[in-house]
Amino acid sequence: MVVALKIEHEESAYSTAIAQYNRATQHLTIDENIIEYLRYPRREFTVNFPVRRDDGKIEMFTGYRVHHNTVLGPSKGGIRYSANVTLDEVRALAMWMTWKCALVNLPYGGAKGGVVVEPKDLSLREIEQLTRRYASELIPVISPHMDIPAPDMGTNAQTMAWFMDTYSMTVGYSVPAIVTGKPINIGGSKGRTEATGRGVIICMEEALRAHGYNDASKTSLIIQGFGNVGSHAAAYADELGFKIVGVSDIYGGIYNEKGLDIDSVRAHMAETGSLEGYKDAVHLTNDELLIMPCDVLIPAAMEGQLTKHNAPDIKARIIVEGANGPTTTEADDILEDRGIFVVPDILANAGGVIVSYFEWVQDLQAFFWDEDEIFHQLRRILIRSYDATLRAAEDHDVNMRMAAQIVAIQRVAEAVQTRGFYP
Image (tube, rainbow, N blue to C red; front, side, top):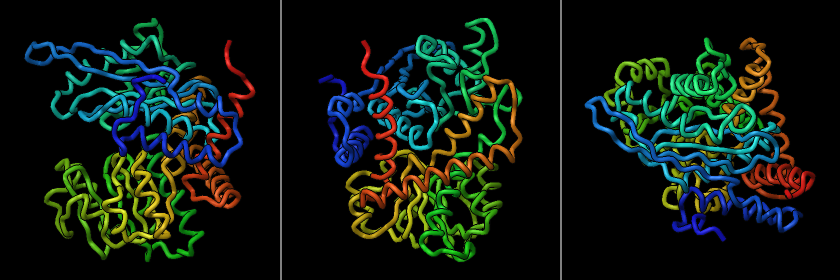
């Protein structure tokens, strides 16, 4: 047993990921050796590096990159900048990426990365310096055919542009396929920015249809988190006519039972950087917003938001997970006992990695698609994956999270069985 993998907190991200995995494998006939093998990340990379601050002082930062599995192909996963990044969290996110990619049938394994930093405390120049140094430290473990990073919480298309440029300057030629989620003018894909949020709503529509919700205008939504995922989910849901009654950011939430003007909310966010001061809504804490009345709750912020403490009070009938790991295992049990239907993260938020795959393919071929083709293929893959998960749920008499894990783990395990163990 590797000491570093010891679980020390029952509700840590990694303990949640392992608990979900252990539950799912109980429904599968898989060689015990493969089950044990898939519990562990393939490799973990920790770097400590200096960044010169604007005042001339050198400050040390710590970054991580974890490859959970590479049986199906190169590993894929985002990079986040947050003061709360831990190796435990990155391990969990890498494992979930493995299952996510397998569930939607992408030729990828799972990876994740992060730097322990509060981005708001750094200037733009300092963020660029940090990104370029972190990218250079990761060069031994990344390449377009080994591990392809992408943006995540605290990072964006510009971050990926710096990342790509650093890698390209190091190898001596331009390598657009080293990252996804970069600007379109240097090889990015149309539709990538909106992909995760749009995919959440596509999955939500499938769940609503199955549960008899046929009128979008009478279907109320609460979206926790108004970053890249939440804001684009809100925009697409609003475009389709759904009534969004609540949204939140890291500072708190706003709620209006008659529905929010999403264009106005987005304009306020763009102008002020937060939801604070927004008129025509009641201001609440994030915790209060999660238990307000709605038909659909979309947690699109961080992991561990739905817990045993608030799960008994959630009033939504359907939960669609826009964030990675927003629900603890204890909360899962409570929600299932209460008959609340959960569309799990590895299905609901897979839109981002699907369009990242499209971007990677376009970069490798130097042949680019139009937005209509991107969104058509995104919907096709997500609906196919939703249907496969639903069939597994019915076949095994389990909930959707368990079913998604069963489908994904089975696909990875079969690939391991076929390839065998080296040497």
